[in-house]
Length: 110
Image (cartoon, rainbow, N blue to C red; front, side, top):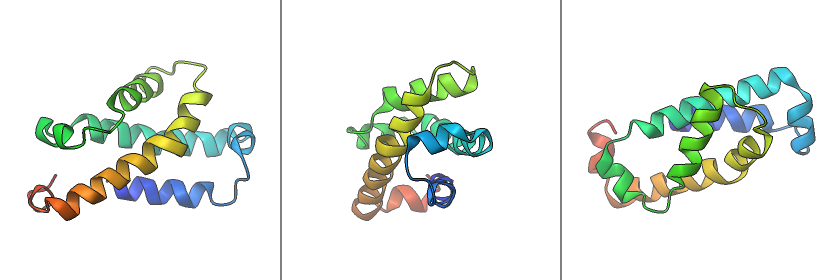
C-alpha cells in the first residue's frame, strides 16, 4: 500500500518543476493529497511494535498531515510539500531498512 502510493506520487509529480506547479493544479493536488492521506492512514494503523522500530519516523508530522487532510484544514501547502519532500522518502527508506533487517515483520503482512 505504501509503496504503491509512493510510486503513484512519483509518477504524478514526475513532470512538475516546483511546488508552485503542484499547487496551481487543483486536479493534481487532489490526487497527491489522496495518496498522502492513504499513506498517513496506513502508517497510523501499523502495529505499535513497528512504530517502535521506526523510531526516527516523524509520527507527529504524519498525524498532523492526516488530520489536515481528513478535516480539510487549510492552509496546508507547507504540510503537503514537507510530506512530499521529507516524510514520504524518509519513512519509506526506514521501512526498507527495517524490511532488510527484520523481514519477519513483512512476512506476517505488516
